[in-house]
Image (cartoon, rainbow, N blue to C red; front, side, top):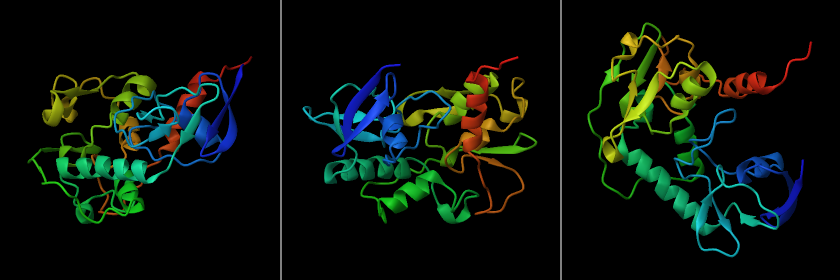
Length: 237
């Protein structure tokens, strides 16, 4: 496989042909924040948190979907990128109800952790806070639409790993909602296998398991990568 040379934050790195900027940077210990990306799932570039600067252009590029090319010079951190990421996180925070103190994922939420790392103590825009339903119809799991950031990680985990295709996005823009099957209650979704992969993939408290108090819900996103790797690694007899 062809090896590509590029620079990330001034450091010369090598990458494999077909790798994205995010994959190559992480292979060399470079941190780029993400929300919609999850190793083992296809990348969509939905959250725009992983944007990086490319020398020679004023455009910001999503690291998770931009392939590495020979001679690239990438910056993963700068005042411009930090401000852009703050805006992206603030817009997510105002669009739904993210009151951390009563959330099962409090202390283990990727959105919360990223906001803290960017030192976001308040938002500069009016809150939307629509009143959205909490679906508790499933015997094991809950979907709280108030905490969904529409990252589609659950959709991809269900489709690409379990093959059940239970989840999809409905409507557009600010009216977008996560729906199961034909917009039925989750408990009525005939295709659901109750595997829990969507719950483990969720970065917030939108998808959680019943029976956990706030701050007690733990998720194992590495499980997704392990399952994906086991399905793509050839088995020898």
